[in-house]
Length: 427
Image (cartoon, rainbow, N blue to C red; front, top):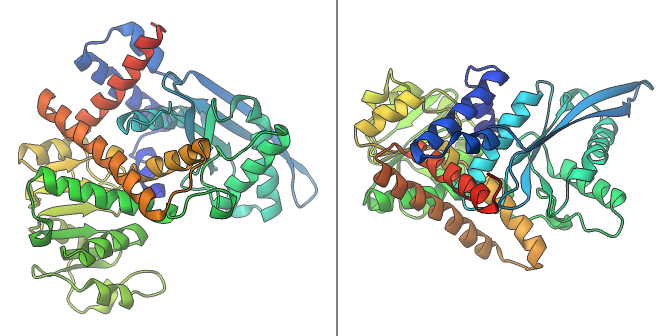
């Protein structure tokens, strides 16, 4: 249920990169038709405002120079600077970067954040590169795009496949190319360089906020509710532990090897302490069930924090939860989500359920601008306010428009972008 899985799920839904771009454009077109906007607005919003392609020479350890291709897509700056991560991956291409910049813009808009959405990419395989090579490539990328980034232009952020070390190199290189300017606007930095504490748990904390708000929407008493967390990895286990400590009954968990279910509740402390070095726990138990069987067990809230394609039209009718939270991109198919809501099962889509890292990145940027010092508790409170506020807006739109939550989320995000463009007088 990590940010990596969230974005990877969006990128790997059985579509080519061109199909992913077309899919996002179709979502925008569909939302704008419902909202009643004309074709002129769609023409502006259907592609990023700018796409920069660069070539980055790096002298490799074997002595020869290798030239890498990089991209930076900036979607829409009507509400503020664009912002997004830098994906270093061998399969990165221009259409993919465009689509992800647009997706980031819509997600920021749903959260009411003053960002327009961006995405960067470098075609490389960091796993095969030395520390020195990766540093030179990272710095070369920032030099190549330095004229189009800045605190009021475009904000490079942490990507699921990057690290605080990469973000530190980016910030340092920006200072080198812009003497006298601060590079603190670049987010995802380590704490000693101005990063915020708690990034590793931001998505899990965000999910807990969504779970509490979901219980409120469904009029559930969390302490008397039964919850299943599918996916007992780093984020899933944090979610289960946090809720368990506050009195919630965790009735089911799963990992890659199987699942455990007990309607009376599982002992989270015992399970967490029993995990092996790979984080798995179900192999220790003689009697387990499959992940498929776990999904169909009765519960009040089902959290999908594992992999893609878990609920589709083939099993949606068998789900016996009152609410399902999609913590991983692509965990619920569009048809599956439609069928769940037809059965009066509330679905919280990944575009908002997995937005904790986006909101956390905003808080790091905002602290830089304001020069504030926040405690961990203050950061957590601000994060919760952003996320629960977005969920409330989407829930109200779903009721007013009589659409499923995923469609409502897209309507909220795209309408805000369209209105910003309209008020700016761009169309």
